[in-house]
Image (cartoon, rainbow, N blue to C red; front, side, top):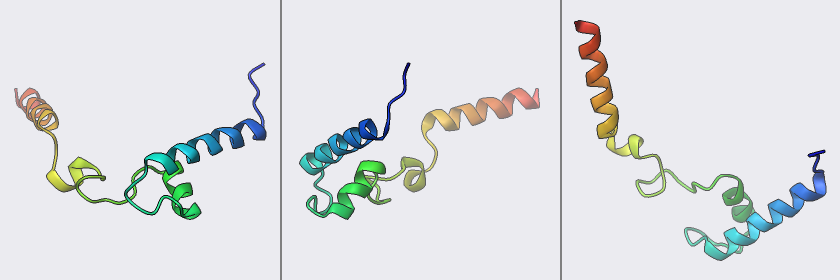
Length: 76
């Protein structure tokens, strides 16, 4: 009933790569290798703009508050 074969997956992959070629400006969008990597893994690098916020800035305020609430609950 819901089976979609390789042709459908290839079609979706081509659509995604076409979109990447249009919007990707971080690197050369004409290189097939780069387009393929970006289509499957959108983060091109781990700089402060592209990467995970916690890796460069530490935990978010919400995470800090949650950790403090958890410590207070266990100490009571």
